[in-house]
Image 1 (tube, rainbow, N blue to C red):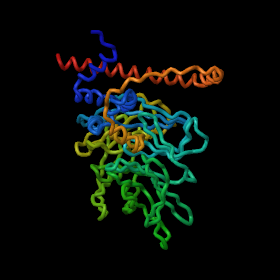
Image 2: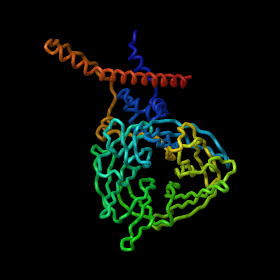
Image 3: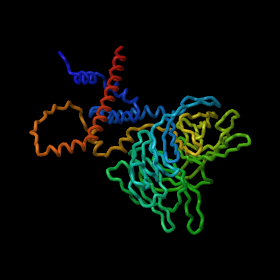
Image 4: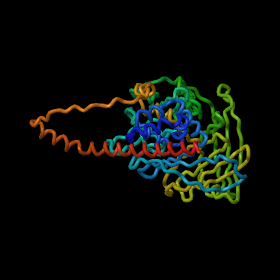
Length: 457
């Protein structure tokens, strides 16, 4: 009996176990997952399932990366490279290549951005193909997709990006400081209607720029007004992203960078001495938030053969989950280095990063422990109503449709020709989109078929 090709493909796909299908999909990148979701409703149902997103996050967390955001004139480019996972020697130098993800060409912004859970926020960004006004933009560095936030008057206000891991919510905090008042605005992303709300803060403070989000709490450097005393104290403001509450912690000194030290807030200062080429690190760790108790540690990074230490000009990138303090060069020099220092093992490793365009005037931001989280992408890119429809979808074989023949109206023939000319580019785009989806479908189907027979053998 002769079977149609579509029936053969459907039979082959149905014969493969679900766990094997999910295992194959979990090895794809986020960008490929997004394309596969557009192939069919069945694939979208599989790739939006909660068990699949959790499996994808587990595998992505096992291979964290360092994300590089490079600002070069009017371009913002995004790169990443794997973090060292195996324990290394006391002092070593290795070479690592970067993967280029996407860029915003001719997009002018401040030399400042905020990062939380894999997303980048720009408070002053000019987007190509949009109007010339500066906008607040949040983007996914892997896919290049972005969200334009509603306007909020003066663009020069201080703003930060926070993330609540429990409800998978991103929030943008904006602080407007003037001589007479201080106004705090908040916006929750992922909702059907993006709008700014005002919230109250019990104390007046001036933000300074350094920030990090740890377990749903946004920390940023600031100065608190002492009122009648006429001066400001250096503090760290703690903003609870979920409950939108403020409090602050006193400091002995300002920090060059904030880090996540095993779930606790940490601050690091760097002092470079070029006479003997060494770097002195001072680290403070917040033990108890309520008691405001800080523990101080001091380290000296020195190695005669370490090229990165000799070049200097390092900035604090963060601390990995394995306990490595990461320092990176501030500008995209050639060669470009990232330094990993583990205080517990007293090991120092310099990694030469290849693939980042060399430009002494290109500012580089580095963020550690970057992982791909599909559940966060779902919350950002889909409205709750649409996501609910996909999750409740039960795949079933569609019924064949019958075409109805309609008599041709000669009086509308000229209008029909005009419509065809207007829709020529739209039809071409639809054909290209369908062919791209068909190519992805054939490629993944071939991989499923091949792995299925490997398991049988």
